[in-house]
Image 1 (cartoon, one colour):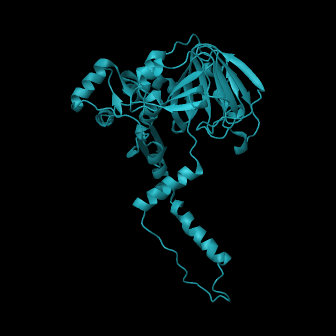
Image 2 (cartoon, rainbow, N blue to C red):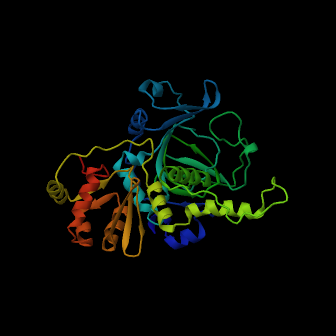
Length: 382
């Protein structure tokens, strides 16, 4: 596969995914960034976009972290070197970046987190650190020197004080200079340190790794709101020698009560589909023009394509004779015959009219797409 340097999807998953780093030279040959440094800075000035500035030597000491939104004056007052701008979820706002995600079709799309873009001045860096998720680092502009170390680290190994989790000591095991189009894959927990050799931009495609705590918290909240309460019962209670003892059987019964909350496979699957496709809390919303289903079809046919909003997540689960389609935290039950269409919608952010019409001639297709458009999930180029 081109972006994997000739390695097949299966070989990448078997040999590298969550196992070891991989450097891919010219994963995107002759790559040209779809967004300029000035445009990235413009996004960082918007109050609905999460952005940060990292200065290696700030006003209050080393590794100063500043949070956006920023102003033009904020950028003009920066030093010439040793600073980095990071803008989160650029895929939510720039269609060309959104479509970049479609190239990573060897990873289930529910695992996608977002696309962060960083601009670093010469010698800019965020310090040696490690992430708890998989990331592909695509060099889009300028050159960056990457160093990695695969040692294990504890909390005592990080610098105390800064909000950034920077390693106090870092010794490189491997290092490379990445040029535009080169890409580095890093599994979770691999320490890495990137330093700009000149003004440069790096596109970070991050993959979501829900923690056990996050999942438990979300499911507990769901149960509190929607599940019918079930109470501990003990009709077979036996006389105890000591009323202060919690017996092993009672512990088993309590555990069984908790586990019963996730024992319904269908209910749990439906919850997870809605949860994992929910819109990020800080994303903007697209307001669709109010047009009829007929007008929508005419424009779709005329334009030849639609775009999926970057902040809209879509996935599906196959049932016995139906498809449960999840989008933006919503759920629709569709006929199994719609599977190819739903698979196409989930895998593409650029939706081609001809390709969709080839998949199915069902009249319900336009009705479904119009609904998604009306709810702000799809949009025409404007």
